Length: 207
Image (cartoon, rainbow, N blue to C red; front, top):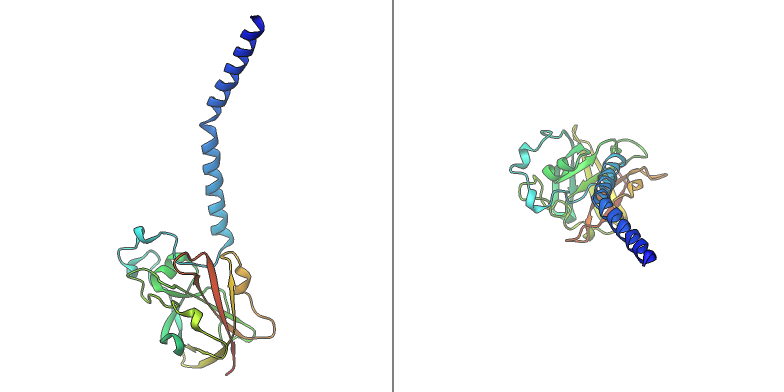
């Protein structure tokens, strides 16, 4: 009888201890998730379709935080129906959501030998994105297709598509220079509508 009471007391104590620990576990999990989010923001990922979702669209894409993004070149891709579209420079998700396409700040410029001019564009974007669906048909670009970048002073740089790759959002190595080449890289999210990967189409400078 005495042993039974000791066993019951031990079990009851163990249950009480577990119940006391329950409020602590979710707090730790939440902190862990928040930390991982900050790590992603700080280390960088390839910009995507937006982190807010359709339920949180900006009231006016033109008035999004940060103001206008400087534009120092234009992009022409005949196969995509893009003709001298202004290409802003920036690095924030909100800038891409507002503009529709963006040259990633600190990536190359076409007049720099050995550079990789890296341009991200939305496949869909938001209703008030300035250039919606900029790279919706990016997958249609094939080797030999033409990409033209024009500087603010009117000089044109022609590229020919030579490569297509699919990577994960944290594969930021694709923004680095390509050895022995001067290239432009066009990036969008794939596949529609899940957007979990990034399609990269690369062109090499030919003139």
